[in-house]
Image (tube, rainbow, N blue to C red; front, side, top):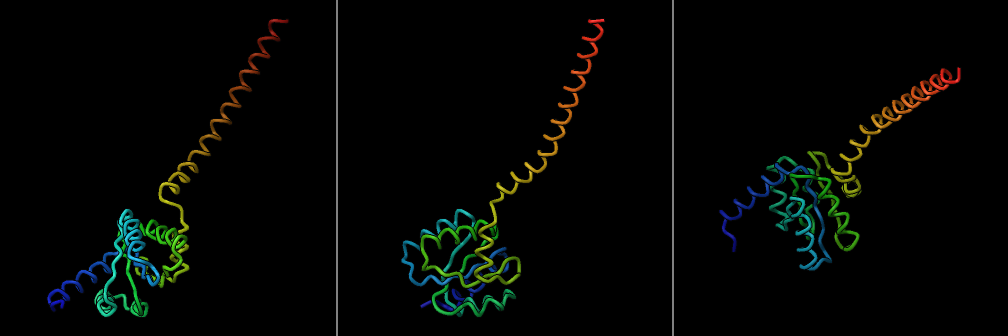
Length: 174
């Protein structure tokens, strides 16, 4: 039997997690075994995301206290919550990859920076390239004009050298 103090502490922890999280994903884990859930937890942990299974009543109370009442409707049946205060795209990508291998996991919904997300939006969030890929594209975008400028300048220098060479040959033959 859990004491009232322990329940209050748990409620406070869940409320703080909800307030601090950049991304909250609510899933239905029916059909997954403990080993699969632990594997998912491990993958999420690598992305600084916590995945917890708590009582729905506790979750609803925490949603009210955190000011995210719109999530209350998702707490039906066996539900687990993922909280990510780091990179929300990385956490969504983990769910997307995990669902490919374990179709039993169902995303019910979530919140990203205070905005309610449906399962399709969370999956779409997982399609966004990683931060490193996006940075590489930005650097490539900056590098392309510079490369073009170097090519143009190189072409102009070559034309100038050819013109000087032609003038030199003309003077030598005269």
